[in-house]
Length: 602
Image (cartoon, rainbow, N blue to C red; front, side):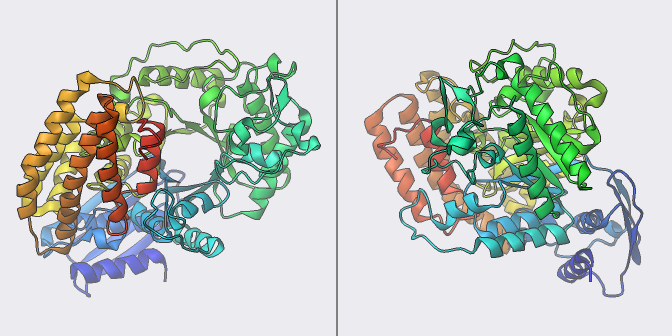
């Protein structure tokens, strides 16, 4: 039995749809993904371009009957008390944006990864990206319980978990993405499975492949993943291509293989040959060589290349020989989240490239200028592309109600086609549900059906999650979002900000005002009860968070020590109970490196 058939039977049972209700599945392949639902009170036919879209058609049919998929894992599925027969009468054709995905980040258990994969097609997402060659880095962070000394380290079986993850992606017919950073380290002979420093020194042979910086060829900052190469060297280009080829041969299950450079900037080679062109031109030479060796081996693997750090600057002399092999990725990692693509000035020009002296653009309009420059440079050789964005990578911790970031996701998705992009993938913590999972819900639903407005999605989500308290909770969380600032938390601008103190003070007053009201909220519905329990915990967290942030922005280190220790104790003690909602490892990391909570406080 196919997985979409199993899910049909399961949801039919959960919604108490009559056993006599007929279902027919039909495959009608087309170049672009789609599904169509035609149903009446006796039977339903779901026609789709592939089996993955048949599965999404199943979820969309039951969504129309009142099922809501509110978070990762089946415990966040909510079923209607009864089915209105009128909802069985459907004639729906859905042609979503082609690229709709999530990339793993943070500290994740086996269950976190599998639950996210299970949730994705329910909300219309079709692509899961495992950074690096396997998910070791993200599993290790959780099972070692990094940044939470109250939990003892646990063993885990990487091979077994990786097999389960691969199978979960396969049966749902999601697009399987892998790797990204790490190739430069592999060329240098290092595993480059994460951002750790390398203890073993570079061999003399491989050192010749590393970028020449300040007269030395070595790991940049001791980290292979952050080290760039002498990309003008033909031997380096060939070794790079062979590394990609071998991985593609060994992993035919990977549909889209990401080929990126180092994860740091201002570290490119200064040898005479490398200075004859900008890094992007050498990058395209390497991509063309990869295409050639894959073609020689008859491998259909698609290659994702990116616009990121120095690669923000478009090629000046090179182009792609066979753009059909490639998918383009726009990765504005330094962007602001106080505004989005909709309001950006699209007439900006990019600054000239100066080797190892670049400054990353913060404004959305500046980032769009770089995107437009790439599109102009490649012209007809520009492949299909998507945005790889960071709404839920760090900035969401600075939006205490998760409402601003949810609305921004909705607005940004609406702008994809006007930017010449075919979708959006978030580089994000999988455990991003504090106090709710609305951001990812909005991401998937809007990418699938752009007709969904934020207001519609917000209303239906809160009604399902909070029942009779929906409006009151929505108003409360909107206030918290309005009064907190993602960019400041994410390290943008000075740390001392007396101008923001009134906003954070007002947010703290709202948290304390709402506490007795939240404590009285109760529900017999298990899904609503879970969300209300999270909300009550979030209210306690919000008090301590706001006190710590107020101390930080006023540069009161004594008050910060006290406030942060209280916050630290709260989230460490409660991590297991609310594990899928809040990534304790990641929020500690972000507060240290971006919010700049002093390390002695942490």
